[in-house]
Image (tube, rainbow over all chains, first blue to last red; front, side, top):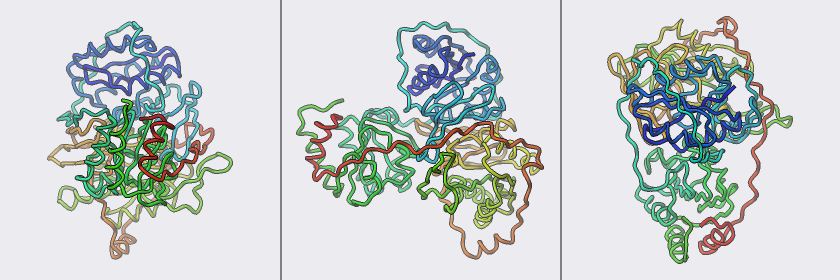
Length: 317
Length: 249
């Protein structure tokens, strides 16, 4: 049997996390089919057909799918689910919203947010904000699985030529309606995929002071993160939040500034390759996960840090 | 309008959990328990809607062991009118919880069902969406703003790219994000009053729902430990280490 992967896209481009999910899907079974549900989404289907891991695209193209609604997607997935042993997608807000709706209709107990594929039916997933890892075996006939994108490398995007099969639309839902999307546009790398993340916490003391973070992030071409405390205090918007209830990031370098290191924040960043903590409280829990800890007043350390970065001849981008 | 709010009793979010020595699960004996944090937001929102005169009754429901009564009492202390405890022993998966809630919805006939977007113990993030599917109701997940209209809700959702607004017809399921509101604290007089509010007890087995886990938990392990880091004495040293030792800048 094959794996059906549900693609996330904006009708023009496939979203990066779908590429990570495709990698995980091919670890489950090499026969990966991708379902593209969209409107005027030919370019998306075409680009996915070039991914070598993908064996077939099922393309459902209809104006009712201009905007993603879980209710609309579910009816399409449900119709074709019988031919598959696994239904998978990325465990971000797209997939978290969608997959349980599909699983319940199929009477399947979903396996959420897997970080490792052990076999076709056995997976590893974090529980308690990543403070423990459970190895679980699904005994359902069809397995519904969501994939933590940052735990898998993105699939290569060229060299393949999968067949694109067009398929019929489902019924348009009448119980839910898209109104608007407010995307936060930025020239910076996206938080979820950035190589370097610089994050501020409650220690920043104000939204205005985040300009110190911004200056360092500009210099390092980094994304800007924040702790829940900083978001709740109104220093910065929620799309920057790193943690159990925010985003999970795994950059090469994570710099935590004025962040004490609550369990729920650590859950979102402690898999980062190199962690730096700058905090004036030497006892702060963030130091327990930091590779390099600097016990200092951030209002002195950050400008100095920028000054030292400016002295370097080269900085990796 | 009647609002049903589902609340879960979980290990308190400030507790550093411990894995059992035989790798069979997490130590829960003598550990502080409390309401799953976003479930507090769900209760708060329902109570606020009632206070605004847009809902007539707020019913809190919890699926779990006997002690989940404490979680219900807390919901009652902040404004829920009555509680329903569906008793079940041992681990229960979101699919079974959503089937139990479906039965409760059929009995109580609420117009809205609220709950937190995710429980912080199993981190599954499934129950609300599953319940919506079983009832064929619309779902508004990760809500950070809810506007009650005549026969619908306008809900702003927290998504990866920013915010999204959708309109769902009533009846509907809403799963709540932490930024939806600021949950109130229960006052002592209200805690006393909550003790007198009714809590109905039902056995899950009497609802005809199979609660046997479908997923086998093979083992639970601690995450790999990070190797101990070092403290640097100055910003200069930090930059040098990042450049020459870690080679990340």
